[in-house]
Image (cartoon, rainbow, N blue to C red; front, top):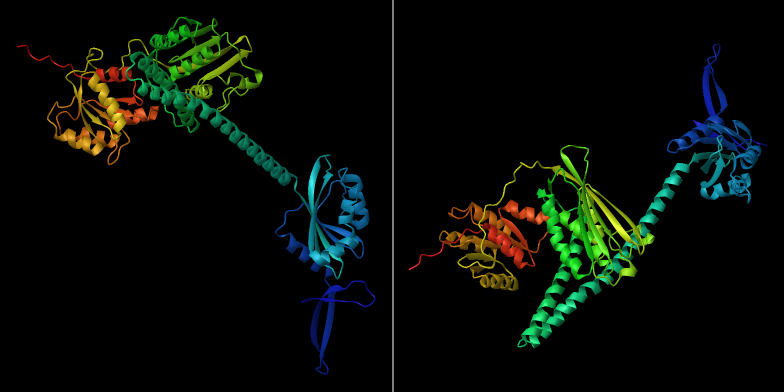
Amino acid sequence: MPCFIALPKQRAGKYVQFNVRLVETPDTGDITGILTVTDITKKAIRDKIFLMLSSTKYDLVADVDLLAGRYEIVSGGDDNIPEMSGCYSERIRKVVKETLVKGWGEDGYVENMLDPTMMLERLKVQGSYSFIYSLHNAAGEIRTKKMTISAIDLRLGRVCIIRADVTDVLNAERKAKEELERALREAENASKVKSDFLSSMSHDIRTPMNAIVGMTTLALANLDNTDKLEDYLYKISVSSQHLLSLINDILDMSQIEQSKIHLNLQAIRIEELLGNISSIMTTQAESMGLCFNIETGVFRHSRFTGDALRIKQILINLLSNAFKFTLEGGTVTFRIEELGAENGERVRYRFTVQDTGIGISDKLLSRLFEPFNRSEKVSKVEGTGLGLSITKGLVDLMGGTIQVESKQEQGTKFEVELEFDALLEQEQQPRNVHVEVESGDLSGYHFLLVEDNEINSEILGELLQMWGATFTLVCNGLQAVNEFNQSEPETYDAIFMDIQMPVMNGYEATREIRKLAHPDAASIPIFAMTANAFAQDVRNALEAGMNAHISKPVEMDLLYSTVSKYLKKKTDPPQD
């Protein structure tokens, strides 16, 4: 086995291999031992180096004899300095002078880290140490290297120098650090923006809420003054609608950010869509003293499949913004034109909203569609500041595009392009068969009202009684199933079903009613009455077996028109 021996009058010892061979003398039969001593220092050093390299990535490995001042490249190499062995100090001088990146060698850093005396002193304490420096490779590129110096055998003054290229690793670490720092800045900015937004929204929500509370107090104090009472109730109604629009914007933005909005596709006629928007916006424009123009081109395809509610939401958001930021006497133009679609079975429309308003600054224009951003210049304009973010989200959801051009004090132009599946004029879509009931008259009709909230049931009950109807009230879905199942045929003309209730919710109750053997179970109209007002909630209601969805807070006109579509015509009683 190998042994280390110290030799007299030599600065360093040797690793040797002892072999003893026994030889028998032929004449006498004596046994003679022959001792062979082999110098295996180089092999022993190499074995230790390769053992060290088994778990290390490297591009150069050198065996350095510090006592003799010599080096030998064991593995790898250097294109700039091709010598594989030689004087150690000369090699270090060439590295510093010819390849070291300027700035590294000026303070003697690399020379100090590779100085033989310093190396021996450090290795006696640590056994190994590393440092990083940069050099130019043969192609002139700057590469970052990690040099690791490890003791092999300090009795012999032998050390191993392992060099590894860590440029890519450090770049990846630097990039990751920059990404983390950027993410942190964005998170901090987002947190600040949302905090500012919530602070602003607190004011915006409290403003109509304060009006509602204040006007209610005044109304209660003036019950005997009809004129004042009517004025207070009108102002309460206006403030309630404004508060509802604020809440809807916040909820819509939340749904879009979580990708929870689903499109409710149906057949749409473009003329009817524009007529609805015109009727909504024309009165508003007149009340604000604005000139509102609607311009249309020739429509080759007038029917298509889309989500009418969401399309109107996009266009009304843009028109409402134009109205808000256009001074009295200004003009808002709404232009609709059909473009050529690449697919013959599709139809593409361009909707343009152009105003002569105050315009948008370049700074705000670059982040116009970001949520929770509001211009300080228009801070007195009521609203969430989410309208354009919601609009952009809906346009993206439909696979469309939205563009904006604006100059301050000259006006703004929005262009939205949306593409849909075209419908031929002869295609017919299923329609609900119903008999219209005279407006405001539900006399003779009896309803099952399923509602667990006392105030909500009182409001709906008063509306029904105001229209001449009667009702039976139950407080949860299970009671509704039992009450309907035990009733005589044609007792109830329709069911108003809340969704979130104890014991059994509205969806479950509807499914149970539709499965009953009761003669009216399959045909009785069931209306969802719920504060869950998103497209997916409408879809859930229809899938559960309901006929229609009416969102809370209830709009009287919408409630009456929806219910009247499904009611059977009451036969007048015979006259005496």
